[in-house]
Image (cartoon, rainbow, N blue to C red; front, side, top):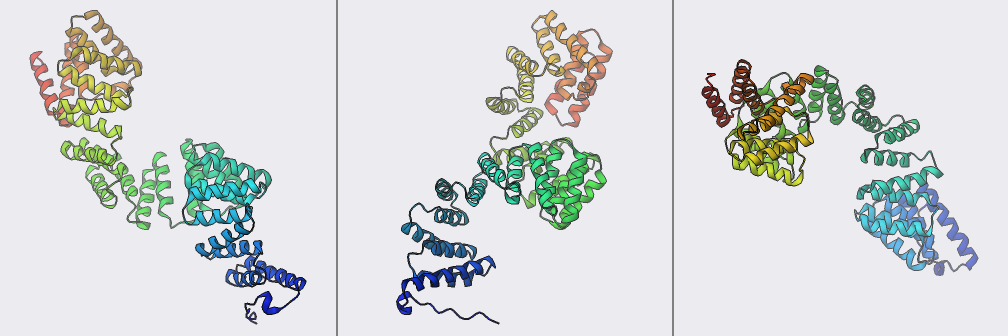
Length: 493
């Protein structure tokens, strides 16, 4: 049976006594409230409108109608109703809160925050206002304010699922992963079918280094939602870190199947191909990622690394140029580019990039080290000693800097200082075998010359020839010629 049609009338039309009008108004408001509760907001608006026609000063009817208009996304009319209510009753918290919701829906977050603050000032017990303010601050990125509002809500209503979620997400954004896990646990106790909660909790465990638990959570998320690419990609990252490259690749393939334009998944696949030494396929994946997202920093980095590894320095240089265009503050891009400039023999450009890094980060080991190498090769020996000393100040176990500094001291006839640096480098190598594996052509060259000066020509010959091979592989043409010249000059060819 359909509801009877409501005819819009006024108190004058009805010609009713005041007490009867009041009864009729109350009845209409109750019918409006009942309809709104059932989600029948069009019908609720009709009841509230009839009540307002009978009593145009009925403030709460304006607010109630504004709420239903909000639900129907009629923000302009909702704003009119809440504004009318405030004209009739200034400082009315429910109207201020309603206007805050209107502005929030329209994306005017600063104005929404001002109105929400006023609503709370006039009614400090209404939890809805605190929840609204937390949502506004989420849009404004103010996680600390979100935590304060959620704390107040949860103290009064511990089972408030929305506040628990906002609390967990705010802790997640702030990097408070243990607290985020606690709140995600509480949230999942209230609602255990939310795959996003498992997803975010899994990321928390991953960042805390508990990869096994992270994998359990991502498995749970995918069990609930198996057609979301981001879940498959994230699980692939965790599997890859656990050494399960086959499982990781299967997840990346699945992510791309679900979302063929997910550029980051192609970069992740490139990681796997690089670990297998399959640079052509890795390069194809990076190219695909950049086609889909030309601004994707990780893809340009990955491609730059691959091109450097295979000796295509011009292509690598183009990627680092692009990275710096995307983000002029990207210090790693300057460092990578400075090494390519060095290997091309463009020493002034290499120095400029190193100095750009050091203006922002004086303690950068790579920038100080390469600057010292280029200064040394350019004949600026005292400046180079200063740069290598800075490297040692920040990383005392950096043997390449020690060998280079020792060579400079030897050239300056400070043989005691030189031998001290050489011997300390040898001691560090004896204690830490890993540092030996990390040497590039510049480090091998310095070590080979140091060994020669220490009276070990046979070992020096082996190391210098190794330096030449590495320089040749990395297309470090100018420095390669420097190494070959040294080998010939010492009679080691």
